[in-house]
Length: 243
Image (cartoon, rainbow, N blue to C red):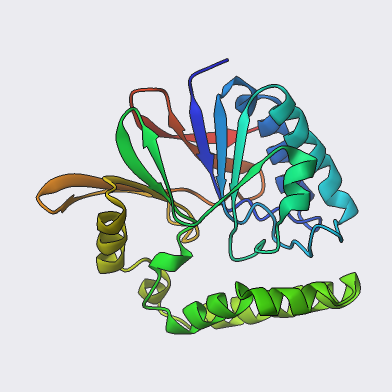
């Protein structure tokens, strides 16, 4: 088993975009098999209706994740702002473990904070209110009591509202707030932060309490191209992926 640890996010897998699903399946069958662990930091799926209402197109993905786990690759999955209804049923089917957001891990002795990233976008107050609503256990119980078709209609409506709202907001509003980044890292004792959500892949270096700190932003997967962050036991580096 290889020593590499892989980090990805924002795949937004959707039956309406089959090229993205094919790319991810190829990634699981080839690139990810050489890793010791795979971390998926949110928005694996564009829509997840609940563990009791799995779309047929998602089953090959779940099967491929399960095979990877069976081969000894540790799978860790974090909720995103699209697939927040992932639950223990998903974990049973795939062998994955659900991560809290944030989650602190150690990479060669360096405290590293993992997040989806939306909690850092505190300038977007409307989104933070929406996030608090959909993450509420009471709201989720209410949605899961509805039929799969009702949930699908709601998911499509929420997605359209999100796209419409995003088209009217200034770009900087939807990015992370640096003070929030620093306060979050400070409260967890982290010197490295890895997150997705913003679709702005980059490596940001700055000073935190007179010590060097780094924020790694994961890319969105789109069409025939994806990207990941790799840890080879010594350093973190970005890598693109295509079939």
